[in-house]
Image 1: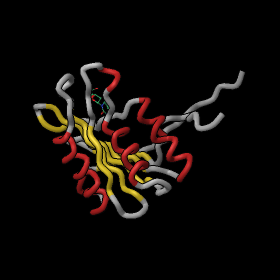
Image 2: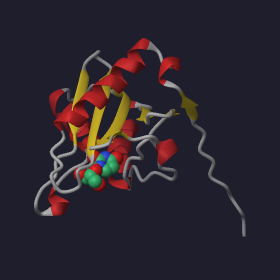
Image 3: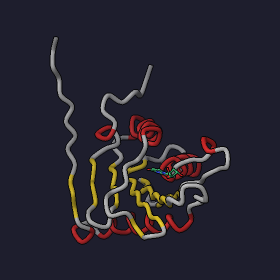
Image 4: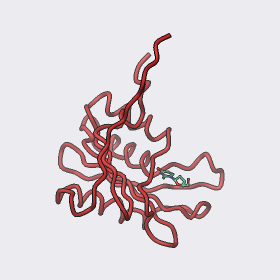
Length: 155
Ligand code: THU
């Protein structure tokens, strides 16, 4: 038997410590929580993706009365990004979430399906940095695969 360890390194930052362009991406994700369609969960999520061509592509969660038919903000954004800008690398994604009480204190954590969807573009075009917003702090991961170790990318 060989005991192995998976280690994920990430940074915890304050908003003021981010570059102007990272703040812009976070602001876009926060703004998109206002365009969420979440009448069932009342959990409003926004995502913004920095594309290699300078564009920012946005998304929000879109729920449905048939619950599994809805999608998360991250997948709305990355599918939109790939559909609008085929072949263009996604460099960064920022995610934020709010409820009636305001933005989450702690950084939002993307679900497994969204990590998998993003990982596909990362495998194709290179690392996608992940910025997870919380009022108290922001988590910065260097890549999607650092959030999804042993990523399934090919068969
Ligand atoms: N949701 C997202 O959009 N992104 C996440 O990272 C976590 C969860 C959505 C799905 C659903 O509309 C609502 O939040 C509650 O789970």
